[in-house]
Length: 452
Ligand code: PLP
Image 1 (cartoon, rainbow, N blue to C red):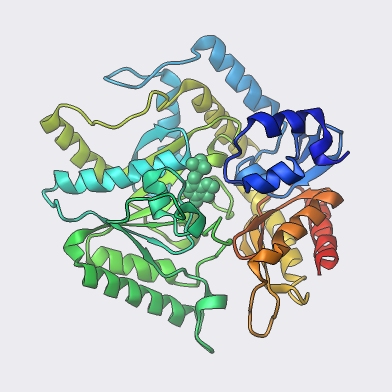
Image 2 (image 1 turned 90 degrees about the vertical axis):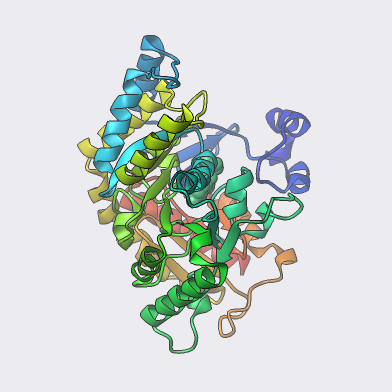
């Protein structure tokens, strides 16, 4: 069945405004309507099975049929389907989750603020950086530095942090206060013969020059994904975060780790910060916290920052930021059950055990004429497709080579995602088994040959 021909696809085309989609293309080709999931597979309405190489949008860590999460949501709905956390009340289950998160977080996190999406968590962190500096009597220390190719979301502040063209073009985002530093990508950005360490030092020096040029008294925070996801699955070069942290420490700039993709095991540790030696003052996280089964995000802050907020609310009478659904009991129950499953099944050990199959499989195709770089860590990886391996020149964007690859992979039964610059992302459910990873890689290798 042609995708656009089914009744569901036709209804969808008539009524749905798709997020982050080429709207003209989806009208022409029709959406792939997914109706059920099982393990690491999803099925379309015609019953075709696809191995989900992206865990949806980097989120279904436990796959697509974990009954315990459904049961946890149901039990919570019967016990207390909604309650809020404003003005001194709180659902019991949200308290439990906050305690649990602080327990699994990197050292130094003391308090948890809940929101609904990664974008909201990052908007909250932006506002926090401003509010915090006002509370400390530093009204000029408000600029935020993220990186080109970063993805931090699409609400007004998080889109301003995002360093990808599509989040800015025609959206009239307010530009002041948002600065973008260089993307850490050794394969593309390093000079000939420059080691990862020397490249990392150069980027840290550039960051320092940027802070000095702006004035350290005007720079509040640095936002970074441990592994940059939507910008191309960019793994930081060795010593990068160590060097960056030294600079931030020197000028009292907050380190805000966006763990929306890396959090909850993607890189083989509970948080990407642990994999890369980041010492965050603030962490934002979402997605795999509930395995994507319920929308929920969190912003964790150090006890030091929390104390400043508490003092300030004593003065102002309120900490004036929060959402109706902050700490919603149903996603909280699902998140707690997710974390219980992680522990019972030692999921982090599983990720470390199977990750080499993905990483070696991706690198095994590095000789392919179209693969410029194969890269990744843990259960996240990518192929960067190029027209010319020697010059690293990419394809003409109009040729949409990456999109063609994704179509070819889909026809073979694998769902993968193309990122700007014809980069093919891999981010399967964390529960994936070795033989399923091999199946995913075989489909991808076949699609690569077909696209070439
Ligand atoms: N931060 C990162 C690193 C992300 O990858 C994403 C989404 O993919 C977001 C933030 C935004 O999350 P959401 O789409 O839930 O708003």
